Amino acid sequence: MAFPIDPASHGSLEQFLIQDPFNLRKQILPVLTVDKDNGFLTGLGTAFLVDPFGTFVTAVLKDHFETPELRETAVATVLFGMGLGFGTVGLSSKYFAPIREAMSWRKAVPEPPVLIGAPQSPRIVADVMRFHVDASAVPGPQSAPPLPVRLSGRRPEVADRVLAIGYPELTCLKHDEPDKTMRFTERMYGAVGTITGLLPQGRGLSYPWPLIEVEAHWRSGMSGGPVFNELGEVIGLVSFSLEPDGDLPGVGYATDLADVQLHRLAPGIDPSNPGSALGFGVLRSAPWHLAGIFPDEAQAEAFRHDLGESYEVRFGSHRIGSDDFMSSS
Image (cartoon, rainbow, N blue to C red; front, side, top):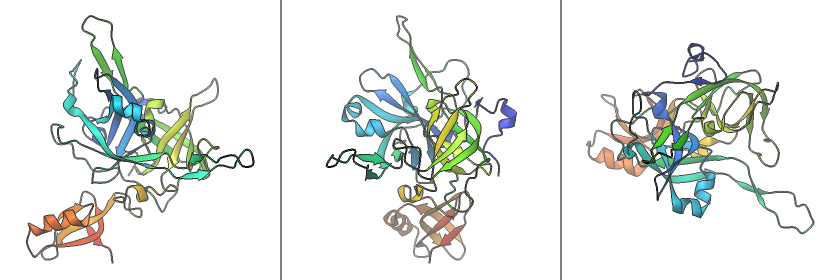
């Protein structure tokens, strides 16, 4: 494998437009909020699919879900792709899928007290959030294979090239014309960079989770997006970045997904096999038939019940895109 998109065919490696409405655009989605009163859109960043059970991860929903005032006034959503469009096209509300079942992957540990007897405040050690969406109203087939996530084996090294993908132009423009037309811009971009450091203890008290430091220009809307190695595997999630300053290049910081043990937050990921998923398979041994795979045993048993006694339920690892299934002992 290689990067999931060929940067060489897109011009500048620092920041290039990705026009891929049918593949990556279903696996990597923009995250935004919709104002409940006026429908105004606010872009937050990027999320990506990590298992076949509809689990997405991001780094941009913390404030929304931890601030009651924000949840009362706006709905957090993802925007599914609408395929090809030419010129100015209408933006149907059907392509917005509200976010549900959000869960943060952040442990709190006490900071050293400044004064003896001073209260200890928690600090964040892993800025990753998982969620699912309600896509029942989204038209057309929206299913897509998850991105392959590497959580073991070959680790990132200094001087490795990586590719981050996200939505740095996620904006909504409200014009002053009489009709108050809102124009929404969302373009997927890639940015290639070089790893310059591995920071297992993070970067200071503000960013204490394991980080991969990359010389790259990652604009703010790319936060939450995937970071790929040159095998096409996701090794990180865009956390934050520093803009280029004069002759100094930009610096991006990605959460190291192996070190934060992402599979504990998203148990459908097989940590040993990128491109595989852990789940309950419904299968028949002779002749072989893998009828389906499910995140929990109850769903698998209900599905098996309708197929007959020749099928059974086993827990194991499924190679996505194939009928391969390896049962766990």
